[in-house]
Image 1 (tube, rainbow, N blue to C red):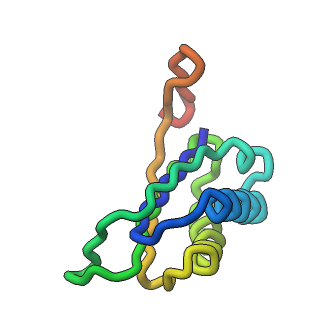
Image 2 (tube, helix red, strand yellow):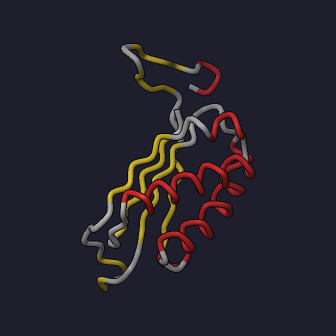
Length: 120
């Protein structure tokens, strides 16, 4: 299951969070897999204190775990698709948004441990 955690110092309404997630799903579908895009779990942690380069200013951190069904070759396309959406929807410039991509070969879901052997 792909996972995307968005941390920012701005505070968004539920409607803005929903719109952001829908736009990121669409961006993922266009840059990688439409099927996988509908399985992304989003967590938005807003209203945080973030000290960026010694200053408290508008900034965001994105932790994206695409999961083993997303080809490594798509990571750059996903990043380049996500950043403009984030800038537009949360009104934070791209040079104040950091995005990390973390791979994981296994996870727990629905009372089971799932391991994708070819990616382990």
